[in-house]
Image (cartoon, rainbow, N blue to C red; front, side, top):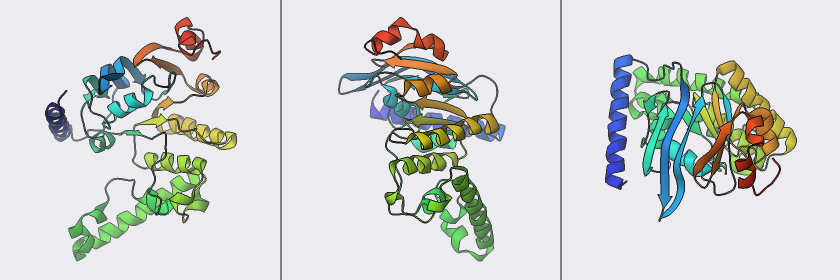
Length: 288
C-alpha cells in the first residue's frame, strides 16, 4: 500500500470514527463480541514478509497469550495493530470499529494501548512526572486555559485530580517510593512497572503487552501478574500478551495464539496448544 493510500485510509478512518462519536455521543461505549479482531493482516519490509495473513480475535476481558519462535512476527503484529507500522493489507477492528491505518495516538484514544519490549520512559524526568504526562484531558496543555484567569482554577483542579490518580497508581504498583527518582536511574524491572503504570493511566480498554516480564526478577514478575489479574477481574480490562516463558503463558492465559513465519499456526486453550504437533515442530521439538 502506498504512503498516499495509507494516509488517505487513515484520514478517512479518523473522519468516520469522529462522525460516529458525534452521532453516538460516546465512542468508548462497549458492547458484546470480541475486543479485537485481526483479519488477513499483512506486512513486509523491503520484500521480507513479516506478517503473512494473520487472522485472530481476542475476547473481551480475557488474558490471551501470543507466542511463537523468534522472528514469528509477534511484535510486528503489535506494531501494525497499534499504528506504529502502516499495513500492506488486512483489517484491524477494535470493538467492531475499523481502526486499520489510524495513527498511534488515535488508536490509543480509542482505548487500545500497548507497551514495548524495551521500556520507553523519559529518562531525565522523575517517575512522577512521567506518569503525570500519561492521562488525557490535560487542560493545562492549552495556552489559553493555562494563563487566562477564568480557566486557571479548572486547570489547578484537574492537576490535583491527576496527581491523586497518579499516586494511587504508584501505590498499586508499589513504586511510590520511587516517585522523585529520575526514570533513567531505574532498574529494568522498575522500568517495566513504570511503563505498565503509564499505560494504565491512559484509561485503556485493552492492553497489548510486549514481553513485559523480560529482565524482571521472579518476585517482581509475580507482582506484575497479580496486578494484571486484578485489573482483568476488577476493571474488566482485556490483555494480549507476548511472552517467551511458556510456563507463564500456559499457567496464566485462558487462550493462546501461536504465530510462525508471520501466520497464525494454532490457537485455543493452553492445554490444546501445548499438545499441538505443529506447535511442537515450530519450536524445533522443544517441550513446551
